Image 1 (cartoon, helix red, strand yellow):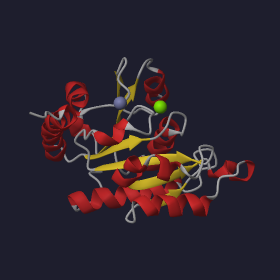
Image 2 (tube, rainbow, N blue to C red):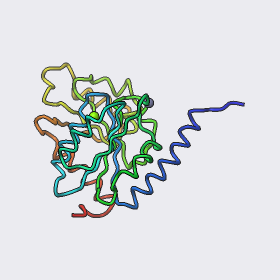
Image 3 (cartoon, rainbow, N blue to C red):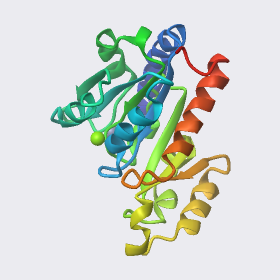
Length: 223
Ligand code: MG
Ligand code: ZN
């Protein structure tokens, strides 16, 4: 008899993710699972997003890190509801970790919930947490070949944000090549160039978010 342990783990995870998803839907939350390598700019993106959505959509964040509450402290400066999950040795978030955080999240006062995953280009893509969409950041300091090396994450993501576009001239990152590589593994992926430092592209990203919210709930926001 052959037992596929990984399949069993993922099936159990998916069942919990489906329960999370029901809870999110019943609270009219658009939920995004945000993934990237460490240092690509996830937390800074959320700082910029908080400012871009102010007065339009209410943002909430669950942030996963192996250790520390630094990201929570950064984000709370923007008056956001933030729950920090410390994963200890785990290198990704799973549906059960999110389920355990949900009693601490006021879903009724959130329109868009972003789950900032642990910085890692590999296993976060394998675990659903109850999100509507997986999205990811690739920064220009990482290399344009990453979609080919870590195809699952790019295949699973609906949107790719290419960050640190202001640093392009200091790197040998080829923007066209990066986009071609991402589309090679996922022809449907949407791509937005951004810089969290200069603010370039942030309004396009905010428009993408509002569009998703509107398609899901048929309204611009609750405000
Ligand atoms: Mg972070
Ligand atoms: Zn992992």
